[in-house]
Length: 109
Figure 1 (cartoon, one colour):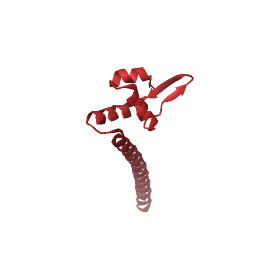
Figure 2 (tube, helix red, strand yellow):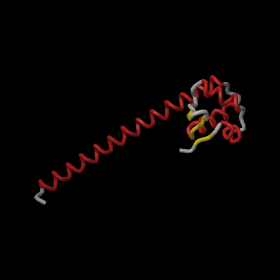
Figure 3 (cartoon, one colour):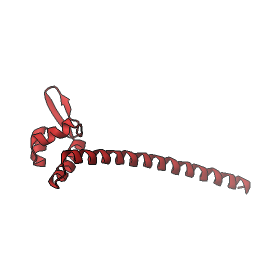
Figure 4 (cartoon, helix red, strand yellow):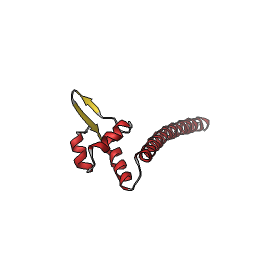
């Protein structure tokens, strides 16, 4: 997993340290602390990119918070829906195979 230091994020995103720290305080990003070093993940970077873009559009931190939380919920719901769909497709496939076996047996093949 790729990790980023605060200074690297500041350079990549061209934002202030306080912007990143405010998102951290709001628990929108969750850095990894190892000893005295703090690192940010790819997931944090993606959220920060989105937050920066919204900030540039004039959306305040409270608005960014709501949008990012809604995005997280939407991604969770999508993942759950994908899992349900996969289970349903597997169930249908298994039943089609069972039905085909019964037909083959009924026709003496």
